[in-house]
Image (cartoon, rainbow, N blue to C red; front, side):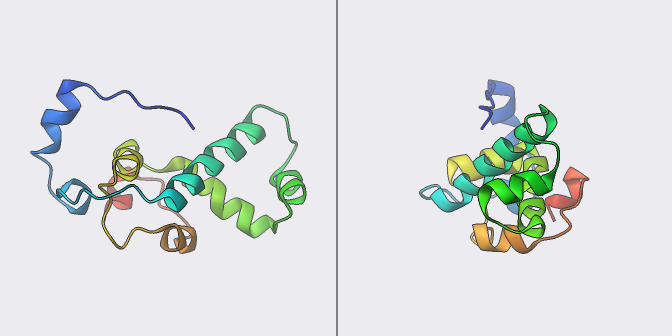
Length: 115
């Protein structure tokens, strides 16, 4: 999973944002949610690097359905601030690995993802 460096500007801007992604809700990071995000990044990288020819190849190699593999890969397109919140344990309580897996299709627009 790619590490996203945070700058002082990023941290200062957090206090000025509104909405569920920027409310101070710190707790222990959800390891299942982080593992799902890491898997999404790995599977997308396998596909885009050419190591696999299709999502079907990933599904077969991982022993899952194509539908499941597709839903997981969608998670690689989450807004960076949502991923940071997950890593920091600051995501809304309703954002769990199960809830995220069921949200299909995932909106491409980051503002819509934050709603």
